[in-house]
Length: 225
Ligand SMILES: Nc1ncnc2c1ncn2[C@@H]1O[C@H](COP(=O)(O)OP(=O)(O)O)[C@@H](O)[C@H]1O
Ligand SMILES: [Mg+2]
Image (cartoon, rainbow, N blue to C red; front, side):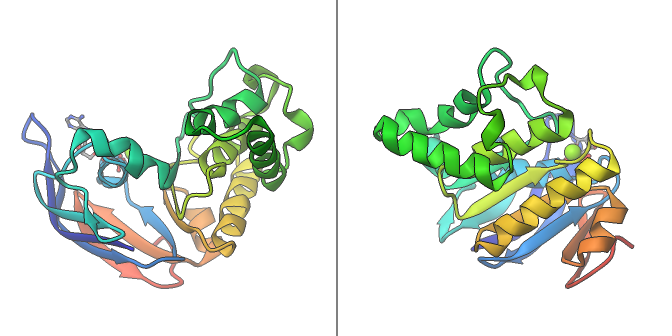
């Protein structure tokens, strides 16, 4: 599903964030991307959702090289993936329902269909009964569950989560990871960056370790170290 070939990313200030990264991620996999702060995790994620472009090399998703994707094709690419952020990025003045519905309101589908999809996504994350609340009325863990519902409401084949539990305590982190695991079991490819070693050790998924922009380890059913 995803291929990185000789991917290097250098930011303007000559910071090498990724160095000659080669990776294959198969459809249906659950992958942890781990490494210290500054190792390049977020950059790798940003290349996937085309927030950044590689300095050299190719990033291919579903057979399409997105390294030089024309700007007008980026919305199409993003519709094929859900993205979850550490800081949730919810619209504070809108209800949970509207936060999740937002992304599919532009697709020209009926309000009945929107309602069905939003309800389904909120049920998966266990927040169906909070759809009329606003983000400030929810705990951090609940807000992140809204972020996940928003990411999956359009039924994407790929879910990307950059440090989704970075602001959460261990109990809430575990709940979020379990939801991501369940989503993966529905057949969605899930890529999660984290430096939460307890989570990585518990779930025993594929672990790709970045160090100073390089892939230094890539093992199946792995632990953090
Ligand atoms: N927009 C940017 N401009 C310049 N340097 C950046 C930028 N984003 C990240 N970096 C640098 O790239 C390296 C990798 O950063 P990042 O991908 O955010 O790592 P991580 O998510 O693992 O903490 C770091 O040295 C960071 O300072
Ligand atoms: Mg990061």
